[in-house]
Length: 271
Image (cartoon, rainbow, N blue to C red; front, top):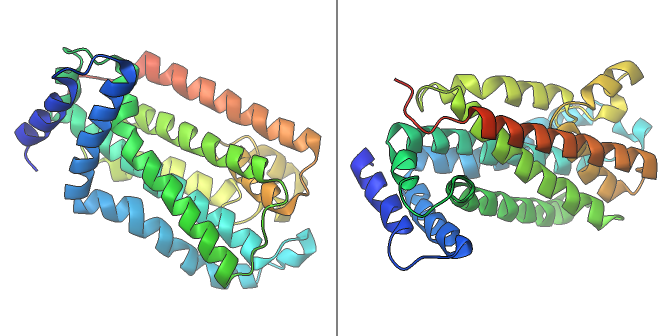
């Protein structure tokens, strides 16, 4: 899709009789959803990759002796699958979207209308966030049927973890987009967050299976409290102290990411 077409679509979202923040954000989200449906590469990253990656992880889980940590293969794969969804379906996809809209001058044009900065970023993110929620629901249903994953013992923790994950990944996507010059280079700028989270946040290897010192350090990574809350919601084995610690870490990363967006997000093309 050409830059002019994207700008026109987004411009129509900000125009007309839309006057309230909710209606302005919803209008932009509808326009962004249309654009998302026309971008095959972004759709593949946001929808197919997160659903396919857990399948490749299944053989490795069989050799982890997860039973020693009181886990089952399903209780390892389900949080991992949701983690993949957050990393690829939300974080990576949104980084591409924010970068593309900035370079096409869409963001600059939207700022000249009624839309506020938070509405622009939120409206652009809503379709991807909704996709992430739907994927999580599909993964939970599939894991229940195929992996014999029981119902969560503490569903509130699982829901809280997922919501934190969506917010943190969306905010970090905006931060990463600020350092990303082109859509093509987004594959490079998102790699550190993706690789570190997969290796150290309990996505590929549960923190329960790591040495205590390493697990304590990895627990401070952005996605670690999210995976901890989601897995703890299913197992019911998360103590009040550990749950509060995970929530505190997630709140700290949320606040830090929002501050970074307000301080460093770029609305002008990087040329």
